Each structure stands twice: as structure tokens, then as C-alpha cells.
Length: 284
Length: 324
Image (tube, rainbow over all chains, first blue to last red; front, top):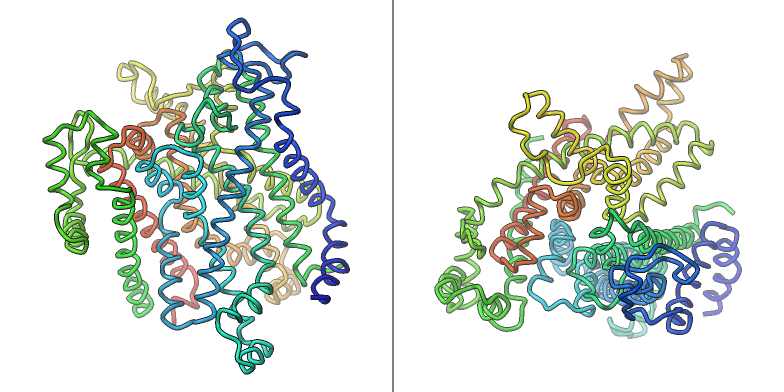
């Protein structure tokens, strides 16, 4: 444990600190987290408050991002949209990481036919255009944010499984695993106590990058009207009205899109930064 | 080569069964009988359609029997009939849409690689230059831009603001009256924005990949040899290095197929292009579920074929595999 913590504070953290882009990404990620936690306090208006007298008014001091076709304040809606996007991104990736790690650990540790079957399953899942599979599954379900999270997670675990399997294959051959086995540790204990903690770093990278991907997928689904359902604001469904009113109201299209762009960019920069900082080949 | 090909083709069999098995699972994923659900969600489906559906899926039989009878129908490309008012066979509906989606994606793929390869090479050759750094910024932004948002922005600027390009469909109303050349120009104008959006999606990723492939090749001994024997830098880069750096890109083209096909749902819906993606979206919205299942299987099949073609291309291009 002390080796781990000293590794983090002596090697990992200083490396990450020096990567200015990654730090910028990390700060934006934190900021977004705070914004979505405090959205009810920060929002100038109730995001669902309809105002028939101020329909589609352009950005002004009163409405920073303008108003939508029902006179709702777009800034407040974008702020509350951040909550949805982050929630979907984090939960979906949580599911994907959990499932991918289990599959990867089991396949890598037991090898043989278990490995073959599980890895073929990964190959098969990768044959489906992910967006097709997600849409097809959602066809059968009532639109709900929980299903969206589950479906994005269940169709996005394959990359993690491959990564964890590769790590497990290396770690399995280490002497300390043999030692643990000789001292009578069970398979489950070896996997959870000795292999998993050492296979976590590539998972961390994949998870950070995965949040960005999940946010993009959720926004595309909501944009198409299959994801988060109005009146609940999400960046994707604000953009749907952006498309409908594109000839009169550019602000409906610009701001939610920028929000997605900045968020996804931040997670990607942070993820790449973590990857570089963890990579022993990167020179200091 | 024959051995390699046989082995590669044999590998398709389990993959194919896996694909059908997962598709079959999706059908049965919903709680309760799929037919009941169909009835509940779409009151337009009448009693007659319900019986037809029950029979088509053989829902009164045990699961494995259902699966194999479904598989048998699948081998004849029989996906049943659409629930929509036209009630046509699913495969017919897909057949008329498929060529549009495939040609659009091929054009997008050509443009994407046509741009990404030179960009990647320039960035690798002038490593750490302003160009290289600019590319890094472009790559990260490219990864982060939602394609549907890009489509909206392009529609706004080129369609609404400047009024240069049409923003929906494939033809202007009444285009039949135009001459041949004018018709072609009309089609091209309609295709510019969708193709831009479709190819932008992975342009960033491919150019980055090309850059790292090129960087790896440039460090090889045979490049040093080529330089040492006095070849000009241009010949070294564009002839000796490029050919080797291009190899892994063939595989990448195969990998990018599911993304392209999946992405067609988005840009075909936004630009109102009557392709398979739009059909898929419309069927999802209408819960026209034989069509959804049909497109899902066809989409996976296309990916499989694409990957096989990429592998074949790789084998043909790389003598080390060809002769093994």
C-alpha cells in the first residue's frame, strides 16, 4: 500500500501536474461537477418555467443564452442539462467498467475455453454498429434515463474487457500471484485482492475517455428524441428545438452544443493526460 | 495464402452465429411477449397482424426451436413484413435504401482517408512544428464535436445564412426537368454537407493514427538506408515510408465501418436523406420492429464483410502475409 501511495505522490501526480492540457481538462471536469451539483442555486430561473411573452428572444442580460420556443431560460436549461449529462455519463461508464472488468479478469485469469468464449463474445458485440444496437434495444423499452444509462453501459464494455484481460494475462504470471496461490488464497481472493488493483490503471484511462463517449451518445439519442424526454432538459434535446428553429434562433443550437464540446474535450484531455502520466515509457 | 483465407473464412461462422444469437436475444429482451408489447405500444397493429407476428416468430414454440426457425428464414433473407401501412417485406424496404447509405459512406471514407493521410504525413514529417501542434488541437476538438451539432452549424451557415447549399433531401423539387449534367450537379450540391459531416467524424482519429504510423516507420533502418544512399527526402517519405505506413491504415478502414454505418442514422435523419439510417430511425420511432431487427442484422453483416475485405486488402498489400 505504501508503495502505491508513494508512487502516486512521487511519480503520477507530478507528471500529471506538469501536463498543462490535462490539468485544464481536470479543472473543467471539477468545475462542471460543481456547476451541476449547485445548478438549483446557480440557475437564474426554474428551467421549466414557461413565459409566453418571451418566446425565442435572443441572448440578453436577463437571459444570457436567450430563451426557447416556450420562453424558458436556455442558460438555466443548459445548467440543468449538465446534471443529466454527467449522471448518464458516469453511471453508464460505471456499468461498462464493472462488466468489462469482470469479463476481462475472468477471461484473463482462467484462460482456456472460458477465455475463448468470452473474447469471441467481445468480437461479436463489436460487429454491431454500437448506435444501431442501442437504438434497437431502446425500441423495446419505454424511454427513461435509467434505460439509457444501462443500454449505453451494456453496449460499451468491450474495450475495457480487452484492456483488463491483457493486464491480467501479464499479472497472472508474476511471482507474487504464485506466492498467493501457494499460501492457499482462493481464486476470487487472488483476482480481487492481487490482480484487480494492479490492473486498474488502464481502466482509469478507459473510464475517463468513456465518460466523454457516453455523454456524446446520450446527447445524440436525446437529440433524436429517443433519449432524455422533455420537459427534462438535456443538452441533446435542447438541440432538437435548435434544429426546429434553426432559421430564427441560432442561440438554441450554439450554447448546448458548446457545452457538449467543452465537456467532452475536458474529459478527453484529462484521460489522455492520465494515460501519459501512467505510461512508464513517457520520459520525465 | 489459401490456408490463411480458409481460416479467416471459417472464423466468420461462429461470429455469424453470435450475431444472430444476440439479435435474437434483443427480440426477446423485452419483458413479456414481444407481440403483446407490440400490441400495447402500437394500437395500429390489428388482430390479424398480431397472429401473423406470432406465427412468424413461432412464439408458441420452445426458444431453441424459435431460434432455428428464425435462422432458417434469415438464410433466405426473410425478415417478415413491415408493420407500417405499406406492409411490404422488410428486405425490399432495406434493399431500396441500402445503395444510398453504402455509396454515401464510401464517398465519405474516400474523402476522409484522402485528407487524413496527407495531414498525418505532414504532421509526422514536421514533428513538433506549428502544423503538428495545430493538428493535435484539431484532433482533440474533432473527437469532441458531436456530429449532429456540426451538422446543425453547417446547415445554419451554408444553408440558412449564406443560402449556398440545400439542407435536406437528395434532389431539388422538380429536378427531373433538368438536363443530365444539371441533375448531377444538383445531387452533388445536396451531398456536400452530409458527406462533410460523415467524414469529419473520424477524420481526426485517422490523421492521428497516420501520424503515429508514419513516425514509427521513419525510425526504421530501411529509411536510414534510403537516405544514406542519397535519395531525395521526397522520395524517401512519399515512396519508401508511405507505403509501409499505409499498411495498418487498411485495418483501420475496416474498423471504422461500424462507426460510419451507425453514424448514418444521425446524418441521414438530419439531412432527410432516404437511406438505411433514416429508415432505421423512422422504424425505431414507429416501433416497426421487423424492420429494426432486419437492419440490425444487415448492419452487423456489413461490418463483418467490411472487416473481411480489410483483412483481405491487408493480406494482398503485405507480402509477409501473402506468402505465408
